[in-house]
Every structure is written in C-alpha cells, then in structure tokens.
Length: 237
Ligand SMILES: [Fe+2]
Image 1 (cartoon, helix red, strand yellow):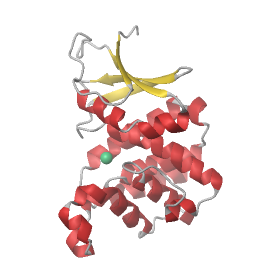
Image 2 (tube, protein in one colour; image 1 turned 30 degrees about the vertical axis):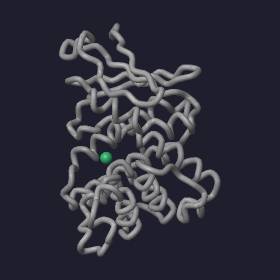
Image 3 (cartoon, protein in one colour; image 1 turned 60 degrees about the vertical axis):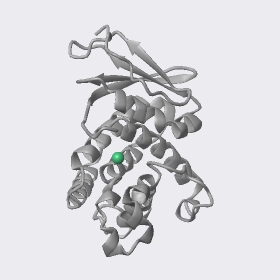
Image 4 (cartoon, helix red, strand yellow; image 1 turned 120 degrees about the vertical axis):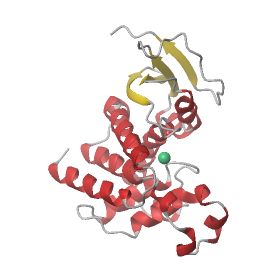
C-alpha cells in the first residue's frame, strides 16, 4: 500500500460518509474485501494497485442508496431505489472528482460498484466494453471478490470479525470467525458466489471457526441455495 493510496482511500471514505447511508457496512465490506484479496493472492494474481482499487470500490459501493431519486429525476428509482442502487453508485462515482484517482482508476472503481450485484460484467455493457482486455479481467476478478465481501455483511451488522481462506484444488474454503451465528452472512455469500465460482473455477465452501462465543453445536443456517457448501470446522488454534 502506497502512502498516496491511503490518502485517496480517506478521500473516498469521507465522500461516502456524506451520503449518510450505512458507512459502517461499507467499511466492513472494505475490510473483508482486502482480507479476501490478501488470502487469495495465489488464486487471483493481482497487484497492490488492484488491492487499492478493490478497497476503494468497497468503500463506496452502496452510495447509490443515498441518492435522492426525485432530485435526479430517475423514474425507475422512484418505484424501487434499491433495485438499481448499484448503477446509481456507478454514476455518482463517475460524476465526482477524486484527488489521487486518474480516469482509468475511477472508471474501474465505478464499474466495481456497478458489478457488486446483479448482472456480471459483459462486453456489450458500454463502459466495461471500452476497457482493454487486462482491465476487463481485472474488473471481473475484483467484482467477484467484492460480491463475496458484500454478502458476508448481508445483515449490515459486522457479524464476521475475521476470516481466512484455504485454497484447494476444486474449492476455496472461507473460514469465518463471527461473534454470533453468521447465518445471514453465509446465505449472502452463497447468493453472490456465482461470479467467483465462474471466474476462479472453484466452488465456494463456507466454514465457521469454532470459538467460545460461537460453539459449533449451534444451528446451521436453514436457507441454502446453489451448490456451494457449508461446513463446520473446529478451530485447532
Ligand atoms: Fe453492500
């Protein structure tokens, strides 16, 4: 992490705070996103700059929730602002000047906010299609990580305190340390795992680290979707 990256992240954080919408959630997603990035360097092969872009995008990914749809005259948002907040986030980021971010970096951060949910990146999407091949790959990988981080704070209550990842031949195990049952977070990560599994060609497996506050005799979340797996793991540390 370069010193000017720290400065720019602070600027992004301050800007995000002005929207007055769940800053704690966005900071938690940023924290988890860089944890996942650092744990999976052998899998994604990305750089320090990419880590910075991921953290920056995580810090602002939901600012679109804070957008006033009346002020912006977005008819679609009037009926259901939450449904397109990822696109509002993209547009808000693109429309703002951030000292320390060049145009390419700002575009990537805006696209990561756009792709933190819903449709995955596609060549036919105008802004994404304009990127060069390596940046398209970069956005796909980082969006895949951001989706998992966002899912891991589904309840917006910062339940996941820490995690580590175990890279296996056919799957990646995310071992969660949580202060209470992270059922909603596990559901959130599974729900948003398709891009990750597609890009990295490995299944997502969720495990819960056993702690005194969270004995592994607790109940496993009832709702499960897709083929991703939940396991309980007794911590040996
Ligand atoms: Fe979010």
